[in-house]
Image (cartoon, rainbow, N blue to C red; front, top):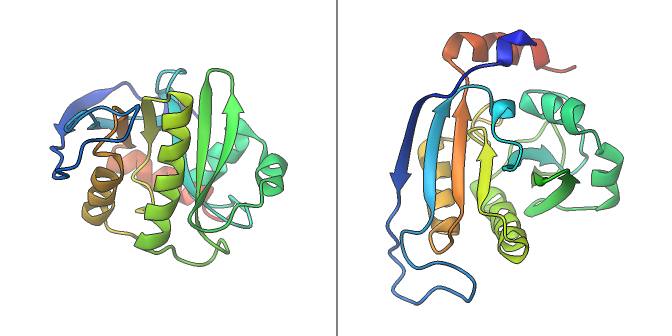
Length: 189
């Protein structure tokens, strides 16, 4: 899979100001403490201390798109199934120094998620992050590949969910040529 090994390029950060006038809950930073970073490159090249997140279905099929790579890299499908998570929840694997967050956004692999289910699963992930001191998460443009959600809406949801935390989220995108080749290679395996 040498195709997927990319160096970090085009790195930039978007600081999102909080619009919430209430003080943040205990254990979280004040407004503007979270950040959204963008990287062009391979998600699996992120530092090994960063947790990872992606979307799956309740049936944990993980048979298409980047979910195939998560399944092959981190294994644990049986462990995910045993958690019996429903759409709007987050199934979690612990691998070495990091957590692998599996955002359950739909019941069956062939269905499409809703923005509401994505938001609920992100809230569940955030609660785990805050409880466990996770401050760095790397992810693809969740829900925007095969699931066809719109990134402008998804990034807005990320901002609303994480605005009163000190969590830094890095979003990885493959350069277009490699992304097309990877998507063709991993569809329905």
